[in-house]
Image (cartoon, rainbow, N blue to C red; front, side, top):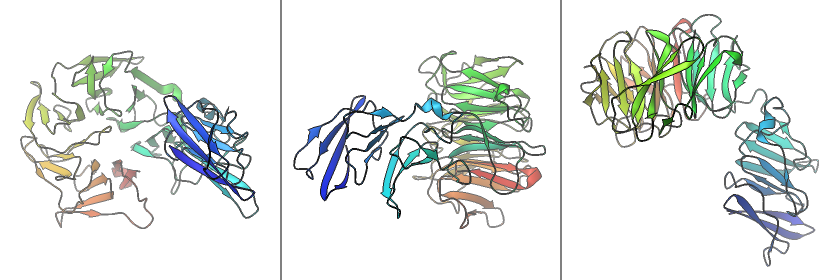
Length: 439
């Protein structure tokens, strides 16, 4: 239940919003809670506990949010949809994005009541009770949640980002400082992977795999799709791990589920120039696969599952090599990093709350040892290394970290201006001598 209200003519009014089934029931009190009357139900569930609000002074104006936002200007007698979430695309400045976690209402110094609507695509403002809205997040506000990025390795080094609800984004000619990104397609995208320096880029959405055949350009016409439902891919992670094949950039390994229910397999996807086909491995990894990786030469494959087990395939098929490794993030997975220059050295990252967040093997995965000196007890989402093997970075729940090989310890590299946020991913670009973290 959510409770809100205000004061009108010296009398306190209150509204209670109670989610039941697929609707939100609304109750009103015009006497500070002494008595209540039911109003008309809102045709939506609440997105969260802060997804219902009233005017601070007018008992006729109410606001409720689920996937879409609704307004009432008659005290809950009737409800009007502000706009369907689909209208956002192409009208981003004046139409609400989907998912409404919060409303804030206040009266400014000019006695104008302002309503701020927080969505999964930014914050909007209204001065007419949500008859119209204006997007405050069009430029200059760092409000996107990025699950990962990839920088094309050739000039002008286009930056590609996978964002939560803000889709697959591109800055095709990046500049120093804040860049403007174009949203190529909407949705949630993660695990951006390329084995030919950005000539082709694989990624996942919760429901399909996407291949961008022309990442350095802004067109969505270059996108190719492999749909989960169409191909009966089931039991997948929300953001399933995917890795481009070093020996063929038009081939990738997908994990997290299988073709059919109750299967824990890896899927090989191949793009033939027009469509993406698949084959499923016969090996069952017992529990859900949380990351996959290739050796640098592409001849060996590595897998970790959510049981903390590590598997290796050097050409004769997968076999269990180690156990006791950390869990991954529940819908994003673990990270396997193969050392850039030292064959057989492998890092595994994951949850570091009840044990180390990073482990290292120098025996090609036959055994692992803790590699967490200097790291706090936190979740390590991703690792990246320079091509000469001298620089190692970690993206963690508590910020960005760098491994100081002289001190044999991780060190925090955040500064006053860096976001105090989850660091989901890191990509090291040798040509720019830059590690790009996604938050």
